[in-house]
Amino acid sequence: MHRLSALLLFTLAFLFAPSARAQDRIKVGAYVNQVSALDLKGNQFTVDFWLWFVCKGCTTSAVDSFDVVGARINSKTSIIRKTLPSGEEYASVRVNATIHSQWDLKRYPLDDHDLEIRIEDSELDETKRIFLTDAENQGTDPELGVAGWEIAGFSAGVLPHRYLSNYGDTSIAKNAESRFSRYAFVIHAKRSGLARFLKVTFPLLVSVIVAWCAFFVRPKDASPRVAISVGALFATAAATVAMNSQLPEINYVTLADKVVFSSLGMISISLLATVVSLSLHYRNREKDHHKIDRIGAIVFPILYVTLLVAVVR
Image 1 (cartoon, rainbow, N blue to C red):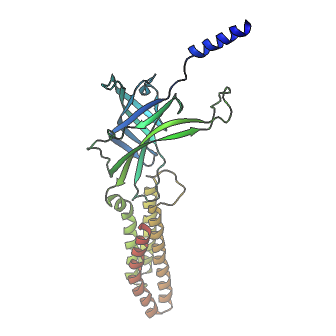
Image 2: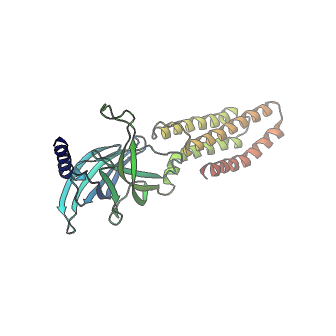
Image 3: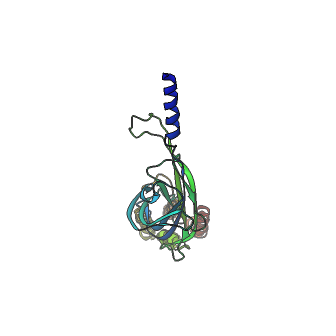
């Protein structure tokens, strides 16, 4: 009798137990309105975009629980909720967020950047909610523009992201792994023209040209000739400080740094040639120092242009 009762209770519990929660499959899309404050020094940029979620049979709306990864959400406005003719639930929101980004500045000031925005549900992991890309409707506004940059394209996709921590919740295993579905869209920004490159490097180019002029000053005018090269060195140092003030702290050499090194090297060569010419002049070896100046006047600009081409390539 007891066995029959236990079997009956087990059967009833199995039949009437709540079924496992089905996985929400949500179509996600984004439309970028504006990108502003692309801040290289601050490692961040601000973006304004529409974000929408379309799902059928979802228990909760993703518009209430989504998060922008690695960002500060400045505002969420114009939230729209409705049921589509297909029976799917639609929700959209306009988001303004400041995104933290580690820029790759190796090619600065000829650098291009991918502005990536990552969307993730802050509550439900991949077993309960997965994102799908709304490839047909996402994109950027035709008037989207960033000062000094060209918008070269837009791409988006969905990928899983792992978190290897229980975040102090001792009810979960210490090395627990959780996976969340992540929707990411990228705005491809390219430098427009050579204007930025010229603005950054023009003081360096002028300093090298000034140093080149030393080859045309007679060695007997020692003071003006040395002053030219020394002045060029100080001008290059000042230009370098101004350039670095626009960039974050980085531990690698940028293209601009290579131009600085090349310019300092050429100015040092000019100063060394000046010292040699003065030494020959004081020894009354006029022919030798004239020869050095003639060769230097020709080789100096050719060598500098060759270095620049090699560095920029």
